[in-house]
Image (tube, rainbow, N blue to C red; front, side, top):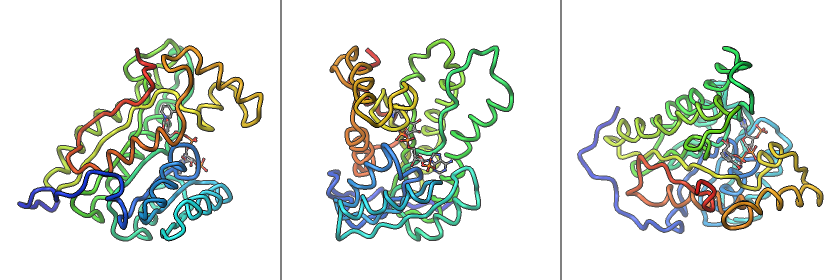
Length: 263
Ligand SMILES: NC(=O)c1ccc[n+]([C@@H]2O[C@H](COP(=O)([O-])OP(=O)(O)OC[C@H]3O[C@@H](n4cnc5c(N)ncnc54)[C@H](OP(=O)(O)O)[C@@H]3O)[C@@H](O)[C@H]2O)c1
């Protein structure tokens, strides 16, 4: 661990300051990661996107390049559950400023009577170990002032029956605070965005909505009962990540963005 006497660098906390910085998005080919990649590229950041499905990843790279024609965008296909693949991703990325982890999946609903050791191990490895492994690979390559952003969901604070395992992987929030303390001497930061329900392929799958018009109606219906009358967009979700990346004084924070859904 490199310990530095120098304080974290002061720089503009506005997202525009991310221009020229490198961001690795593990899970950058869909939903929130896809939106964050395009936004970062549009600001002139260098962006490295990962995902398992090569065709989807290639499309995401094209999408980000279209959003930021002058930005360098690299796609590295691989499974975030494979430690070697994660190491290789960071080797190819080189020096890194920011990491966003959206990969890891969700264990899905099941009553506690049906939760098996294997299901729990898969869920904890997918969310917690993947986050630790990504941090372990990233940190030695990160510039002072850089950040790691993880993701969690509103079930952490408002669990529902059948969602015990999904809620338990919210331990990622505890991990975030621990990482923030451990990485602070290197002047690196760690935060989590805690999401309500956003209109992404993941959420559409969870509520049985396809990408077609009928699916749009299911999404609209799911949003009607929320305080603001609709689900959030992937861009709105991604903007919260860029805020955490850009602001050098944000660390150890669990930032909720949910359109008031937790109320
Ligand atoms: N959307 C919501 O309403 C919501 C609510 C609460 C929390 N969240 C959390 O926010 C995060 C992002 O959600 P999202 O809605 O954007 O999901 P999404 O649309 O399903 O996107 C997930 C991304 O991660 C990649 N990915 C998944 N598993 C991976 C693995 N093992 N290795 C490498 N890449 C992997 C996917 O690509 P491949 O499948 O091709 O690998 C995809 O690019 C998730 O952690 C989710 O739990 C979302």
